[in-house]
Image 1: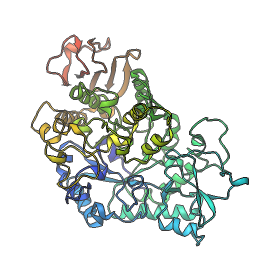
Image 2: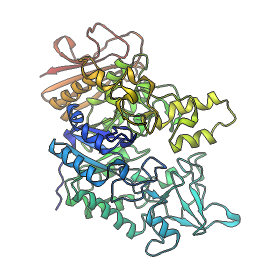
Image 3: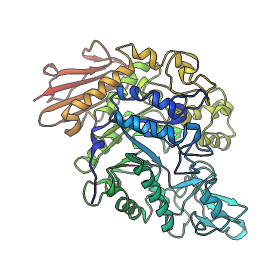
Image 4: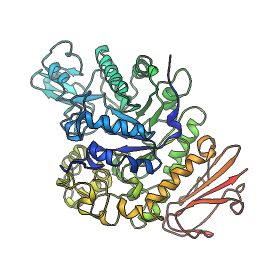
Length: 551
């Protein structure tokens, strides 16, 4: 019988990307000792859940998303004892902890892969192997999302293996029931240790079409519409739910590239067919790019509003939204949708913009102080495997300056610089030599300085999170977008039987007239939250106002 509840609907999660959060032992690498030091800080934000990006042993080709052992914690993060201490510490503070589950692929250093390439049973078919076609051609024309084509030749096995991401990330063969049993063992291992759920990395990629046919439609990213939402995906997710999750009170959050609200409801509709609790969509991250962050376009507010509203309206009364504006896979939001010139104002506005929508909000480390993008002088300073491949293989006929700018706009490393804790050396992240570059603006943007400033971005986040937890309209109310045609304002209301909330966000540094819906009289409402002390008829640059009418 299912133990399932919906505790996650009343929470705000904090995402930790371990390498860059806080170094607690002085070796330059973020670790669980540093996390333990900061548990009270996370709790002080109003966050009552933590999502850890991978903590498992890994060669680190994709910063932990190439896993070599699913049932341990990497020594560089403190090992299992440190994790247990953090898990217990979080639970003592009333906080939940979810892990990253990465089972579309493993590291090529995983024991399963080593035995599979040697054709040692039962591991022979744990991965997707294919012989070369005539004249040594690849098994099909699919592209990797990180590095070239989706196939790599293995000299030991004398066959190609599939890698939809880095060459060192070999795709598992989820059609093999033994592989699915391995996944269930992993899930049970962590749930039995007290973990409260999982964020499942690109889980919609785990079922590939029979025969692995060529992609004859797309000119780029070939195969992505073929291996996404494959023929057995629902069946496998249902199996994991039935055999594991139904026996635990755990949350399952699925990363789902290119998913639409309609497609999401095939998995998250809250009835007997539900196999997932929430899905991470990418559409709200695409208002300044095309298909990937590296194909940069001017920010388009209407595109952004349409994406948020599409998910708010599409899931209303049927499924539950996961809300976010930043994570480890995208550059910093202030630099993208906001303004570095108006860093403080735009960081606050972006916070309120998504924090009062329907769903469970996630805050990414450093987002709460308005951290910005990083602009290295050389492409050689980047660590990210995807960024390096882009530089080495795309636009190589252009000047160095023109090749570097897309990396500034698109690299995941912009969100992976160490968290800026103070104005001290290395931003207070470590007493040693940091594993990665610290953003040069850490002396102006850091936690310590903002702690003591009641008007800081940090304290604005605390106010916004506190408010969303006290307002019934945020938890239960209907969402309505207003003035959809505006290219400068994002305006929406949330309304239930008791309250009506109005959120007005300016996405411009120009003066723009404040405008409320005809049925919302701001003179009779309470201004709950704003990023400016004075609020007139004209909105200031990147101003936000949150009004409340009690019925």
